[in-house]
Image (tube, rainbow over all chains, first blue to last red; front, side, top):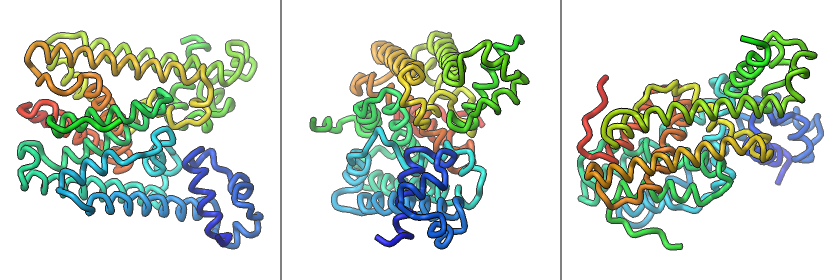
Length: 191
Length: 191
């Protein structure tokens, strides 16, 4: 991995673990092994490097979701696959986490990839839910856009509750609860 | 308000806005108007003061939820009242927000009120959902504990999505989506 990549990947990790205000240029240099001169050769400063890191995390989230939501199976099966994908619940979401960073939220350039990612995800999931309704797999009544927003919220809030409890099982329970409402007849997840 | 109270309230605000790592003793002194000597007269240091502030925020969250969940109306009506209570969606939850603070999560004393609050809330809501099932207001099928965890997750994740979009309406949409799944025949919220 070249130094530019190492700087981006180290910044992604630090933003995930410590947030923006907790991620100092010195910490980035220490984790990446880059000297101060190298960091400022590749990036204008911490906001510029953070933007590259946040953009990368947002692209990753989107690519994984798209792979599952456009993958095999019926529309409803793809929604369930997406929701039940094994996640590192106690680490939380590297993109959702940024919404708690006041410096990221206050900077339009840094907030943009966060906003676009969740806007895309809610819309993409709503589309697959609408397909599931059209195909008779789901009841026609609830608005797919609102349902999609609620389901993405369950994922993001599931991380919050799992971290509060220091127990990844709480995350799984939130997903189970949501699926129990979405598909009353769904089989329980295998344990 | 005496100085001890002002220190606690100022710390609550700063933890909500900036998080633990972003809340310096100097910022607490500036916001509260306390001198350094006064702060260390009342509290042993930042962790001690943060514990008082977090405990207070946790007690507030619990008292408001309890008032709604034990208030008037049928069990289902009380759940809907709780979920639809007007919240400052873009500020987010002062307790849930702490789960993104690595220093709070790493300190068992600081994490305890966060853990206890959400554990209590999930259990309390599960109890009211079970009452709603027993009274025939809700279908008997989904497990009330999992449903309760999913609904609390929707609230917490709704804040994440509203902040990402800089739009409180996204929070309202997440609640609408959850209620649409919980009570397919529920009337839409008044606008």
